[in-house]
Length: 165
Image (cartoon, one colour):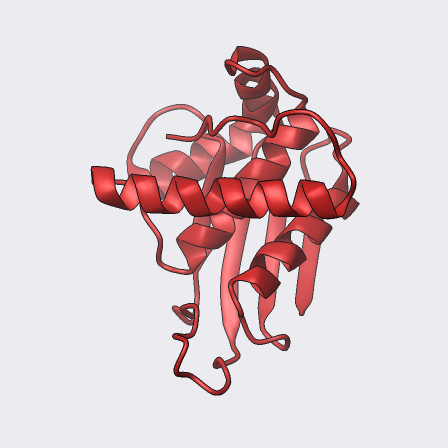
């Protein structure tokens, strides 16, 4: 799996954890090991510009996903998943830090960025949360991936509650 993490935000973030949880999520979703993903960490001003340009919404947001080859998790019947370019995930640590503080189970900016990375991966794979049934499926899968990764890393305590909308 080729995953690039590029921190352009000026904020110190745990890039290794972002890389690790992205790799874990993609493996768990059975994405071809030669597929490529880019994660970019930007400041609030850059995220606001992207949010306006692509969503026509004001202010910075927490995470944005830009799919490339529209890869999807393979079905149980598929012998081998296709490989390709997954796309880009853009994260904003300033928004993540505030969301972590405001969450029912307060958590760190890095924990929120890990959650947002998984959220972004799922968006790249075609998951969405516009409808209640889609939201239940996506957020359930997101929690399972984060919990699985945390368990594998020997992390204790409750996983961050979903704060993305």
